[in-house]
Image 1 (cartoon, rainbow, N blue to C red):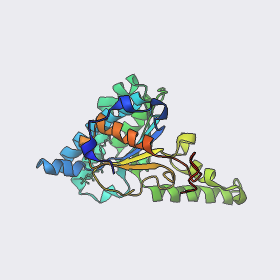
Image 2: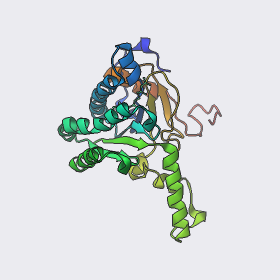
Image 3: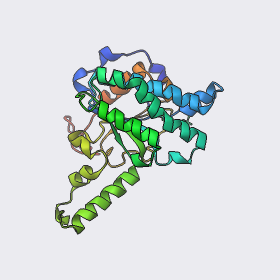
Length: 261
Ligand code: FPP
């Protein structure tokens, strides 16, 4: 776990700019607790959390991250009280209304993954417009997981693969890792589909049905900081922590320790 007391001691100048993770995924957690601590309604935390999304999008893009995947609404989040779900469904509308011009200015392309056609019509429209309005941008991909769940993702991929076999378009003997990756909702990201780094805020250390297949070799970094308080300094520390990790992908490192996990 990242230790908050180290905060502010190191900054971007200490980062190795040649080892910036290409794909960063974030489980943005702690909006409700942030609001509760201030005796505010939970939705105040989500509103502030949306501002953090804007900040971190710009920071990540400037740093050279190629894909930023944000877990904005899970398939399980429908279980929340109606008013909160309703507010969360309105957030993309507000976010894209405010922020698309800055996304374009920063050459950031918006993508979404999840069951978008189950979202309210206004939310779907906002999302589709943002994707269309930023389609020409060639910089960082800002990939929102909206109404996303990893078990759903894997289930749908399996169904597509089975359909392919039944239709005679896919030879079962040729199904491998890559076939599965290609059929997942991150398939459109090609070589960048798997996050190099997964961050979760708020002190919780679980994956919560996010990118289960894709994080097989991701570095996982957790921080106690609540998402609305997450900022450039904390993000820099997460990247620094990532750069301290020794990524071996099941092989041996240069010192040949023989540890293959
Ligand atoms: C988890 O915090 C957060 C969410 C379920 C929603 C995340 C949404 C945002 C950060 C804003 C998204 C912005 C856009 C543009 C879509 P929690 O409510 O579970 O917090 P708690 O664990 O403290 O209760």
